[in-house]
Image 1 (cartoon, helix red, strand yellow):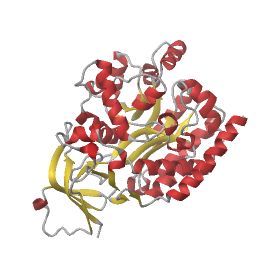
Image 2 (cartoon, rainbow, N blue to C red):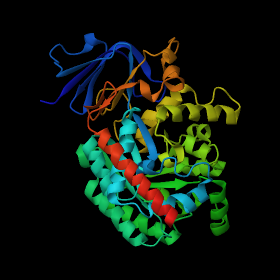
Image 3 (cartoon, rainbow, N blue to C red):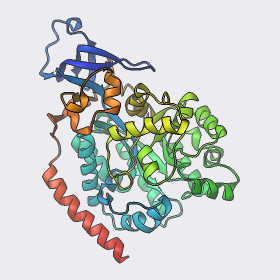
Length: 439
């Protein structure tokens, strides 16, 4: 008999439509195995449905788990290593030299740290593009989270052929692993690091493996200028003409877009991962999220790696995402709280291609976050959606379920030994920094 969890007495953010979540007061969520069996008043639950565990959610908000739609999880090892530097010097002079010294063990422990931080902030699913991705998959399987994984592919770097083979191996080995908790993709890093012939090789492999593409697109003005100088078109048009968008595509950033670019993304069904804090901190710009949504583009919310944002907190990302759209358009109605919350949940799930994820409704996967609302910054309660988006903090996360399994209980991690993780991460981060500086 599958495990049955009954969450009762909270404010439940329910429903699966495209509008605001419906907030049900004093409702229950019944979880059977990995899926939600019932959402609604307690009286509507079948009389013979007996839970194996009850979770008291009185005074708490019950939400779909947050989805971090683009990150580089093991870059927690480089958090604070190279701050206050523009993107290209940041990459070329600091990050890439440090990453040359990475080992599989480094990536494993850095990923565990990121998963721990993310879970305690209510993130149940993430999209990761990095190296040694078999070790990332190991961390995902051990901790019980959900992930969209891809091996980053830089076509102009030595060993690009071997990297592509590693990407193929990742897809072949881990696609659908963990009872479907893992999806895999191939990841040509960006137009400025992947020449057309290399992109075509990646697309041929993706066609054979029937897997999606994960990439960075139109992140900076320098990228726009470089690609226009080389190919006479925008990065969006360039990748479209290469056939990238004939595949299911997750495109991170998409900051600098013309109206034609947005039309191309919408027409091809490209999903966008919006990274507001990273785009601000690296001075990349403000993505036209409102215009993308108006055009029908699926947009998920993301943190990028902790080396550029210094955290993996989706509450901070939600706040800044909404506020940036308001100030950039000089319209306080732009990207309202309900739409921002959807980007952080079901928008991200759709962007990553996970079916029946991101909503609290029967048949959906039971990835659930319970927020304790009993804190001074969460009173009074005029509008609970606004309260979650504009006032709540990661520290308010009380309980987290992924695939129907409780991974955070009363704020405590159940599948990660944080004392061991902290020890390993500090030693490895110091070694990476020393090696990069010597180089």
